Length: 465
Image (cartoon, rainbow, N blue to C red; front, side):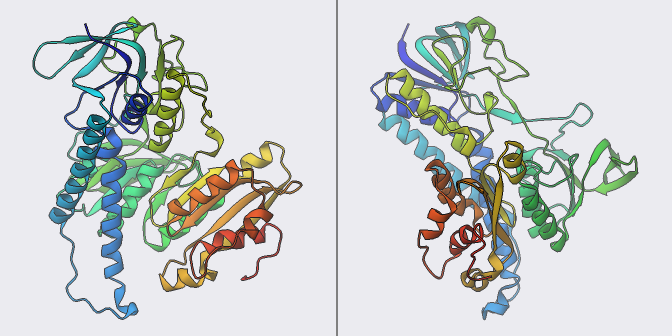
């Protein structure tokens, strides 16, 4: 029976990164993947294909408003078949790239489902052929997550859809109900609104993107209203049933008012559940809690040589976080010095229109932690480059400690917010003050100047507003 220093189960952005890093550190490494291609949900049916659709749908919307830029285009229309071909081409290129990297770094790969026989033995069950067993001195579980259903609302793949189904619709639906207004919900709402669907969001909490800073959520609600994306907040869907033409949703708000909505398609976007089916965790000595595998701050399970990373543990379900956890765990196994993952500054990115990027504490969380809070805000509408690019919606909000000036959190809504937020992650990790950020000269004309201006605003010294 073949024995490895490290066996990784799952090849998403946590698993394949952990496997490559382990191999780079001199550990004999194997990777088990149940699907035909590498990259997990993120690369195959998540982060990458959805962003292809977002970019294409935004381009289409831009073309419909491009005349004001002096560009005259006639008979603009959208071709879903061409979009799907481009999406498939990009996904295929990236999955092949992961396969190449695994091979280049001498990671042994197995195609099949991994299942514990005992804490050190894993059975690999391929779709066809005999089951094979391998030994592992260390195991990294990185099996990811799957879309959640509700007890009374189940996916049927035709009318009631999950995020994977939404990637391959042959045509935009005439009307789309989105249950859940987290990142997945508002991203698909943005895509299909651009493509001409009448979109309605239903969220049980008081705001769209309820985990974001409240001012960011309010700005997104304003932007969605401007784009005629409807939404019902503080509301739950009590029932979804077939109607004469589409599906009927029975929606109840917190005051007890009930309304019925008739929609062509329904996207159920109420989160993702950890995926541990078939792992036989009990044979490894592991007991999930609410579906998640319990770990400490270094991703160690209660079984000394077994680690778990990514969506299968109760940390934010973000691809970049899973990769960071994978690198950390590989270094732990290799006996190297590590920097523990700083969970307080993990950036969250939502690729809606406008985009949202955030890191660190919200204003509310900072106050709850006892900080004397000082806010610096600056709107993109006052930035010349944003005017040039017709990207004036939104603002940057910097949360600082009034006494020390330290940047505690940054929240951005607007054009390329998901790119700008990286600078702010670095600023917080380096314990940067608003004054230091303001003194960092930003080039002109750029949209990123707003970061510097918001830092000035934290001292009531903004120049351009």
